[in-house]
Length: 243
Ligand code: SAM
Image (cartoon, rainbow, N blue to C red; front, top):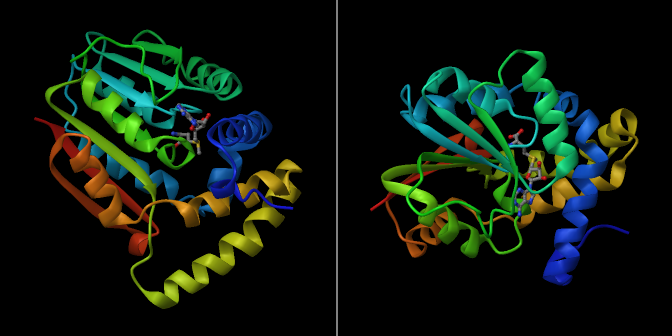
C-alpha cells in the first residue's frame, strides 16, 4: 500500500501527516542530511539570507519542526527580537526544543503547537514568516496562506521553502527515480520506516509547481510575489509581501 493521499479526505490526510512526523521525529535531522546529501543546509542558509531580518524583529517559523531556521533567526534577531517556532506536531516540537536548548538558544524563542491553517496570533504581528518543507503537508494550503497574511505586519515578508518542479526533464526523471526508489529504502534502513518516506516522495510529486504556488500567494493577498529555483528547481524559495 502507499499513501495516495489525494484520494483521502482532509481529516485522514491530517491524521496521516501526524503519524508520519511522530514516527520520524527522532531521526528527522539525520535523515534530512542523508536524503539531501547535506544540501538542505544550503537551501536554509539561502532562505535566511533572503529574509532581510534585522535585530529586534519578530519572526514566525511555521512547521518549524526541529528548529533549523528558528535557531538561525534567533541569532539574527538578538535579545530584543523574538522567534516563534510553531508546529502542529508535539513530537517534532519536543525534538526541536531539546536541540535548541542544547546549543543554548532559548532566551528569545517561543514554542507553540499550532496549525498553519488557523494561526493563533493577533493580526499584524510578525515582520517575517517562514515555512520550510511544511506547506506540502498542510491540507488546506489556501487557508494557510490567508492565515499567514493576516498575522504578518503590513510590508512584512513571507518566505516559502519547498520542493518544487525540476526545470530540466532529465533531472526530473532522475529525481523521480531517486525519490520513489531510494527514499523508502533509506527510510527503512535509518528510521525503520519505509512508509513515511514513501509518503514524502508522494507529497513532493503532488505539491503545486512554481507558477501555481506563486498564483496561490497572489490569490491569498500577497504582493510582489516571486520565486527562486534552487538545485535546478528541485526546491524553490517563494517570496511575497503583505501589502
Ligand atoms: N521546517 C523544518 C525543516 O525545514 O527542517 C521541518 C520540516 S518537516 C518536513 C514538516 C513539518 O511540518 C513537520 O514538523 C510537521 O509536523 C509540520 N506540519 C505538518 N502539517 C502542519 C500544519 N498543518 N501546521 C503546522 N505544521 C505542520
